[in-house]
Image 1 (cartoon, rainbow, N blue to C red):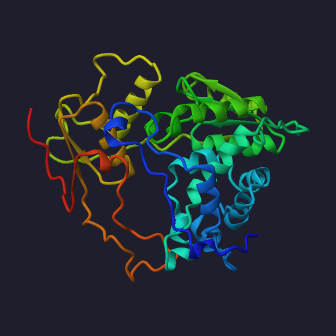
Image 2 (image 1 turned 90 degrees about the horizontal axis):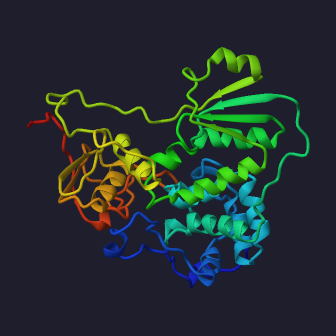
Image 3 (image 1 turned 30 degrees about the vertical axis):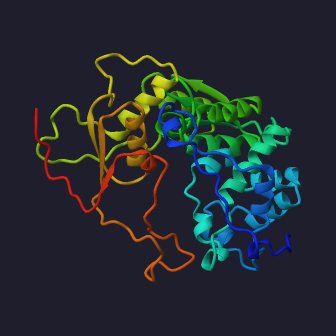
Length: 361
């Protein structure tokens, strides 16, 4: 464990983003990475708390954060990777897109800026791939049992990974052309480039997981077929079902669900064919995004990159405070005013707006 007191002398340093004018011209990742020296310095800010709330309260996975921070500080990268992978199947995903609940529970954050835990996690996993600490490790023995997993999104991939490690023969069925679910089709490339997903899927394939893409269970395969050939079936069918607004004018044209829009853009970048009839694109248009969360922010960034004339994001809730208030005490996750990379690129945000009707042609 670390015993240094760098948090007294070293300030938090975030990697920041590429310049807005540059990143609006492409769909590449917007977040930059800290240098090797900066990563070590940031790891040294960890106080090695007696009760690490980042691990016990903040992180849903229970990542051993002080332990891998200490390893990064000492440049024991292999040990750091083993510690991180003991609780997290896909730290290369969470290191890029997790909202970092752990940092809100960081004890240092009570008086100073929290430790850059998410950035440290990402550095560990990328160093693991670079040094081949993370490499195919098929199970030594199989237990003779087979499991079918329906859906290859985050839940399906996690189930496949854990079951495969435990010796089960795993087959993942995915109706789309490529595996990854929300990771591949729902999250924009500027937040999660798809080579990251492909790298993990290929690693799992090398470890014995079988992926059957372009197969829709219930149409191409019956559940009876799966029950006859597998000992168990895991349903991991995804989170794409939208919540509609049943208000006057909903039947008008030009109104789309966020997932229809985001998935189509990801397909477009991936080289999949989009017919003119189904195309949804914001080029030269004035766009309204209803919903102020992460998905709305993704739509905002996508519309700006497509060349929208104007983008306005509406949120039904009032504008959150900029600092934690007494109703959301540490170490709880506070509802604060947060600005994504997309918000920094343009557009307008409006608060306390309830959509009552759609009007027009």
